Structures are given as structure tokens and as C-alpha cells.
Amino acid sequence: MARKSKQDAEQTRQAILDVALQLFSCQGVANTSLSEVARGAGVTRGAIYWHFANKKELLDDLWNQAILPYESLAEIGKRTDEPDPMGHLRKIIEKLLLDVSQQGRARQVFQLWILDRGKLGQLDRNESMQEQEQRRLAGLERFEAIFNNAINQGQLPAAFDVRLGALGLLSLVDVGIMSSMGLSQHFHAITDVPRLASSFFHMLRSEKSAFIDTSHTAKNTSTHG
Image (cartoon, rainbow, N blue to C red; front, side, top):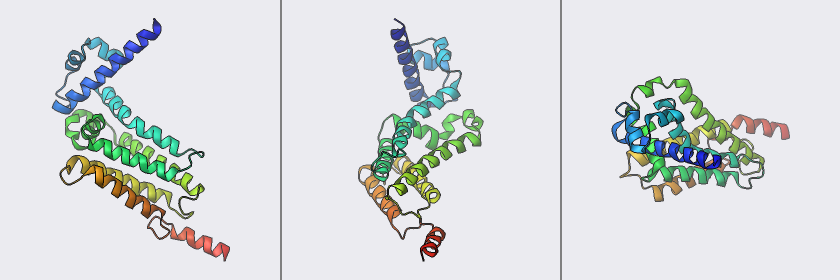
């Protein structure tokens, strides 16, 4: 019986998230009341507050739910038993950009947070710059960890600059997401994403790329000379 109650609670929570995302995307956060969300989900206002303290918490859960699949995949790429960290990372990037380019949940969430930030209203201003920075830093750290794993496995040159590489990859993701949502007529995700990813990852592996730390290479040369 307890198990069924827990399952019912999770179904209610998900219904609230689904309706909230639709309403926030269509009419904005400021113009959407929690009573509207409750009516749309077929629950009481009290049920909303049982699961979410306020709209900010609702929005945070929508974001976390959307980004979790990619973060979980990134964690696998950091493991020492992952035989192909670079190939794994490329698949994550391609999946993210393709998902955002399609008319689905991932696109709705990213569009609300990135392209249509005005719809967040006062909540956008209340989110501190520190929170935003921490989210991006966490992404950079995951990329760096995968790059370090790739170096250890011989997939990247020993002098590869993991910090610069992570920044470059984050820039590629940002541009890809913005292009898929804001330049949809010029950005053909099905063909463009694999080509962009292929070119970028080929550049990362090159001994002559801009991501090679030349000072590190010089030190290695003098050491072995």
C-alpha cells in the first residue's frame, strides 16, 4: 500500500511539472498562477505546495529533470573503465543538440531558460549570478574530467589543455543550442550537428590544434632532450 502511495505521489508530481512547463512556455511564469497549474494537473493547490515550495522550485526541478540525462551520461565518461571517453563525450554533445532541436521537452525547457528568459519574469532577476555561474562551472568540470580520462587513455595528446578544451566545448554547445532554437531555418540539426561535432573533435585530437599547451610541450621536450 505504501509503495502505491509513493508511486501515486510521483505521478502527481510529474503531472504538475508537465502542466507547469506548458503554461510557463505559453504565457510566462509571472502570468501563470499556481492555481492554474493545479487546475491543469487536476490537483488541489495544496498538492502543489506539498511537492513544490514555490514557482522557483518548480522551475529548478524542470531544469534539473531536463539536464539530468546528459549529466548522468557525462559521469560515465569520467570512469576509468570507459574504453572510449572521447567517443562517449561526442555522443553526449550530439544527443543534447539533437534533442534541443526537436519539438520536445528538452527544447521547451532550454528555450524557457535560454531564449525566452523574459518569460521567467521576476524569478529571472532573483536567481543570483552565483547560481548561474555554478551551473556552468559544474559543466566545465565534467568536460575537464572526461578530457583528463581521454589523456590517460591516449586519446588526447599529453599536452592537451583541458581547461581551454572544456571552454571550447561549452562554447560549441552554447552556439549549437542557440542556433537550433533561434536560427532553425538555417540550422539543419540532423546533418549539421554530426558535422560540427566531427570537425570539433577532430581538432581536439590534433597535435597542432590551439588546445595544445605549447609551454607544456616545450618543458617535455627539454626534459627528454
